[in-house]
Length: 318
Ligand SMILES: Cc1cc2nc3c(=O)[nH]c(=O)nc-3n(C[C@H](O)[C@H](O)[C@H](O)COP(=O)(O)OP(=O)(O)OC[C@H]3O[C@@H](n4cnc5c(N)ncnc54)[C@H](O)[C@@H]3O)c2cc1C
Image 1 (cartoon, protein in one colour):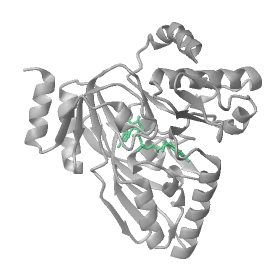
Image 2 (cartoon, protein in one colour; image 1 turned 30 degrees about the vertical axis):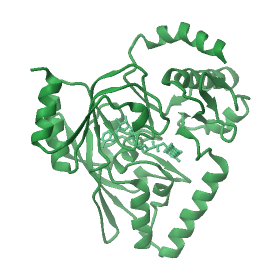
Image 3 (cartoon, helix red, strand yellow; image 1 turned 90 degrees about the horizontal axis):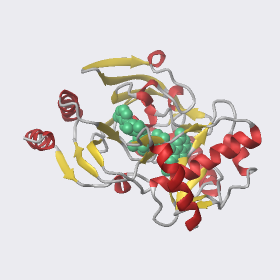
Image 4 (cartoon, protein in one colour; image 1 turned 90 degrees about the vertical axis):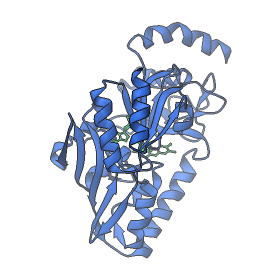
């Protein structure tokens, strides 16, 4: 029996919802990417753990997907399994600690913290993310980030569940050990400081206002596409004159030079090429090597060679 048939049967036995031929375009906020052979949606940590162990035993390419707000998946079909975590979404607060399962919504966590008058997690309200995804990319804004409130995570790595403390996670700007196959974050404990609900809600409202004024929140995007450990690249991108620059259906936002938006049926290739143009501009104008913030999925090693020629075609179309 074909390995994907075996996976479907195992998923059925574990009562895990299973889809065939869904596309990354539907699972990601930027709205691009190819079809996926199988999509699984476990609804508990136990089921998530069991199916991941099974997939590992079967040596099937597997990718975790939270809210898909930091993913750029190639346009080609993905001959593997996407495990969507959004239904593994338990949350609870005890004292100053928040316990969240990996697929819990970041804004829902922020709202729960506000109800309890706990501060330090206001930034979570601004992320269209799951808590697991936020840990992986050490997400943050307005001077707050995950590493600042992180206590521990339960992580599945090499077939075993281990506890990771902050020192084990190698947190840096938009980085953690989990970004490069360092394991699957199953659940997370974060710690906050006491304040008042009014103050926390006011902080959230202020952050949201600034975001709405400065970022293209109504458009399809994956947030900022580039970052640098020490330099705020968005300000420099602003001076590179790329706002409004377009490749295919992708455009550098006129509102925020760090955002690429999908304005007209963009492909992942359009986005990939536009991000590369932005990175090149930073290098040529400021000698800065920016890092890619998006998590690229299913991009093959020879993609660069392939895109060199296809990119020219795409640009000529614009
Ligand atoms: C409008 C907009 C604004 C944004 N603003 C910000 C911002 O202010 N600050 C910021 O830092 N980011 C921002 N982002 C980017 C994004 O929201 C964050 O990177 C977020 O943390 C991604 O979470 P997610 O659940 O969507 O993860 P996904 O995009 O689904 O996944 C991201 C990566 O993590 C992996 N992954 C997901 N879950 C797990 C898990 N449980 N275990 C292991 N690996 C996992 C995926 O395979 C993928 O490689 C913004 C995005 C958008 C669209």
